[in-house]
Image (cartoon, rainbow over all chains, first blue to last red; front, side):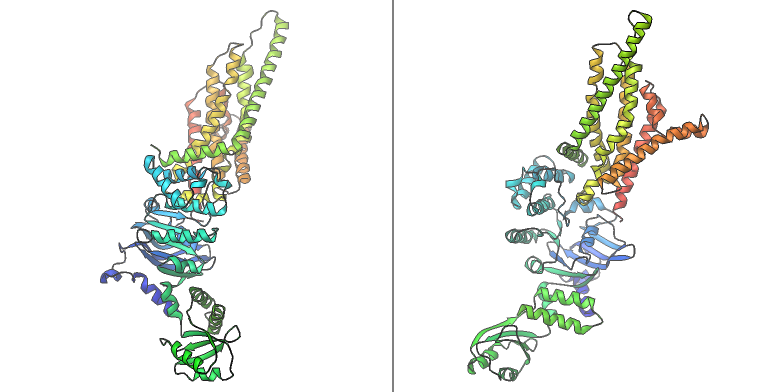
Length: 358
Length: 257
């Protein structure tokens, strides 16, 4: 576990090509650069020496269970609250020393959509624009653009107080995008949306990648896989892993897994399968006739397994590789953190995750 | 040019007119002002009839003394009760509905937020006070009186109102519960009122004068009597500045919690 952690910290400058990037700490390529920030509320430590950075145009997901410190980190980055220790810089400005400059660079969607119920959508967005110093024709074109982007045209003259949760969430997002900021910080952007809207918002976030740096927090794992280039898993205020979604699952996989389903279940199939060189273990799956086969890392034995099944007339119905989803990785990492003293627990949880997957 | 400060004022004014608070508070305020005027004019009339019976012929009654001074003096307690209702939502609602975070992460300074909110509620208040000019205007048709003490009385109402509103703004900043905010500002205003009583207990000594100075009573009293004293203007100005400063500190400190 600690190895992964260390590697994760090391890879914060992974996206770079310049060889000196590791030497120069404040790097212009990083739009967001967070160094060792800690936030304490009295005796409670909400986040503990968190270090990460986001390059220009990158989409980073903050993944973690509730109360892990995602919102606190975002609040520090948006200058809503200062960190107890450490430095956070956004677009080269320090969050404690130049808060106004930082705020101008950021579009922020807090946990609860920050909407005024007594205003109409247009009035609210006008207010948000004026707060950021956008006025006149620039404001009306920005307004039209963000209303169009989030499909709020049909409700633009309605009071926000009368809108549903999904619309309010989208109004909140429209507010964050209004001034086309280089940095977007979105705290659970798809909460309260219906599945169609979730897909649309994910598409929107994907379309922002490249030109905008985005940090989004979520506890919905497919979301992170769908839209983000990099995932930071945070648990109990500490970063437990940081990498691309694929790398993360690959790194935690200890063996290749293949699931097969057979029509007839011969008694000797376990022994016959184990006889194939490279197969480590054969476990019975959930449904009758299905087996989970563990193979040596880096070997694809599907061909051999199929040949054995067909030549023995077992009636091969299904054969597929099982990859560890981000969900498994997440559960494993966060559970492992909780039970550092008991490694057996982590193995159990991993097996459990596989069973649900198979 | 629409600055962020203007944006805050415009948004707050809009918020007031959408909510029922302004209409209810305004209606009560105007009703009481009208009722008090009617009562004092009635008393003045009764007094005039008495005088006529005693002296015979037309009696000259002084509306400034009999009506307006009493009217302005009575308005103090009305303002103590209703202005906290007008200010209670200013920060408390933002915090309750989590729009406070939006405001605090927008590129606007805290003093712009505080001043914007104060100016908006003060404008509402001045509008209400402005409507009451109807009363002296109507009375002017039937009687002669000196307008100057009326103008100083209105100046007093404006300054006293500004001070009360700034106390209310401060109370609203310390809590996210509007009822608590209203009650805290009501309590603070009543306490400062009673300090005047404490001052008179000490009599005309140095400490007595200092204690009385802290209360708004004597300062307002002089303006209602038609006296414009720089000392009184300084009192209201510095009281307002102090409350706005304290509000700024409270709003700033919420970031650290």
